[in-house]
Image (cartoon, one colour):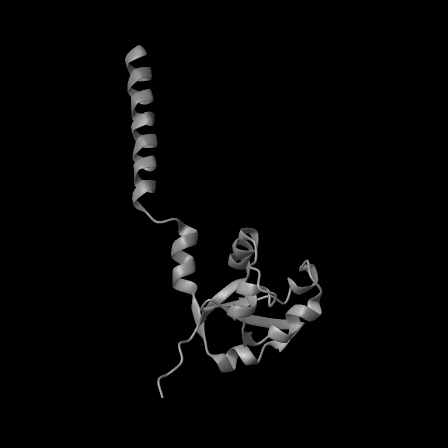
Length: 123
């Protein structure tokens, strides 16, 4: 009986170690889905979402849907609404007042990202 206990315990820990080691080699599921699901939007697509109820902005090459966030934003919505449907990197970087957003704001961006902005075609 003792031999059976030792062998099953050893087998259990070998399996636990194997699963742990396997998780080190595989990318996290969320990360692989995010990379595969990233969609590209043109500036024309972006411009279609220029109202407070349907507000998309492009910041640093990524497109964000801020429709649900606008009412929760700490400043007045009328400061942000003019940037709906537009490329807003400079406005985001300076808050249009010459000061940057906080690192917390940068973290929040990830929650609202829906894709990336298509590069301009050369003329």
